Image (cartoon, rainbow, N blue to C red):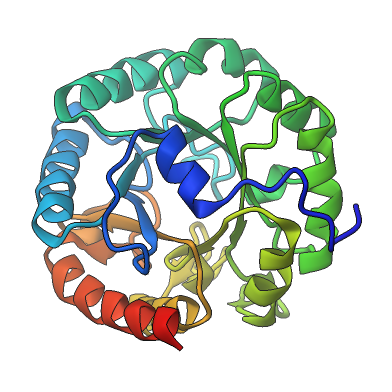
Length: 285
């Protein structure tokens, strides 16, 4: 792909229009937020209700996320979720109850048919970002596709991933920065990636919570450090990230996945105030 060619561009405004969202302050990034995994309907409902009210109070566009299966857990004993059938049933109920666009990740081609009529954005996990068949079959649904950049990929490698999606005639693409491997059990963020990937003619997402993960760093599970989530999200906002991604939980230490790096729901409002202030300044420079 010629990085200067943007004839197939899909913009932040296109994303807003495609999802039927509101024309809030154009400087604000869209927010993808929700629990890491569907632990129960009650938990997902609590998070969705809180986030919906917050988005209306603060006037930002929200995309709700939750996973029905965490297939890449560290341990065989780790909680994975309810599975695709029950998970999609729960996400459909949340979508209808709160009128929210839904994002979830897919791990197998066999799951695509089951989720395509409920989910607005199909996400390809970072560990699967080179799986051509999964990417192509997901793109054939004509849904928006969010590809997480693998922890092992350079930002320019995502040009080939974008080509795989566009080969199906689908140009509705998001790409996500979520950190890069830095030795064992550690990730760092090279913020040049956001600048580089914004040249590809697609919106760039910054995954603030997974970027501070320590993969496998707690032995039988991944660790992390949530104190870095908001400072790094502010940096991404200053660089013009189109979308910010947060995993949230009412009580992260009790979360069944990503407990070390998920944000407290109660902390999100103040965090977003400062992030949006930075985004507004960046937009006016």
